[in-house]
Image (tube, rainbow, N blue to C red; front, side, top):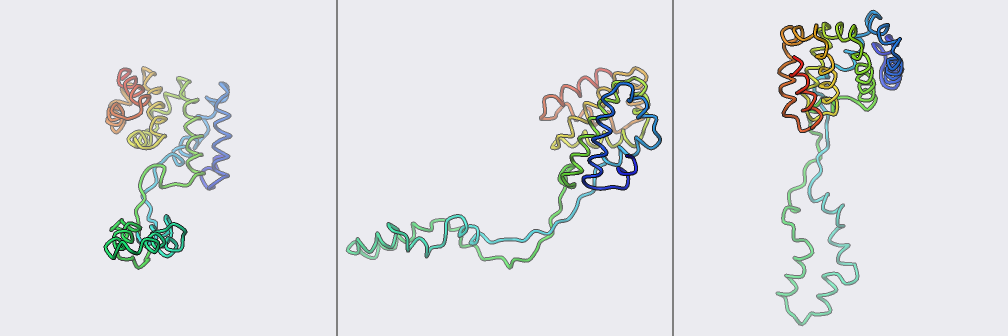
Length: 235
């Protein structure tokens, strides 16, 4: 399973993480999983934020968007009861009425914006979830499910709090308030603070963690704010 997580991609990696999450539900397996060499490093590799990526998006003009949404002006002219037909039936009104009726069929002046050339434009994609595909997002959810099972055991919480890489990753995710994983990271940290032997390590050794917890108290998510307060209270 660790080989698949470390070297695999897509569905195989997601499946391997799901298997570990199911194994972590059994109390007898939890201590054994943490003791497996390379387990925490593999979990950290899945959770670790990815750098921003560049995508090229084709620009479309407002004229094209307007035509797609409402149809062309010619289509309006050929439709029964359209502005042109109304004018032809009431031709005695005069040219002034013709002008007002014709202008009413296309009132949005912004639609006359000049057409773009259609060239691809590079766009930088940021965010914890936006920079990865659907399979990796699902694998991360499975890893968080496993971590929340593991931290229920005191021995596991002791070892997790002293793994510098995974604690740094959890602190980084906890700062991503626009991601659903933000709550899971805060919740995992809150459970780690319940162990009295972890409090000094988390407060003084893992220097990125306390600022992330404090930042979590201003999260838009009510549960995130609650677990952040629990963590601060335990520390």
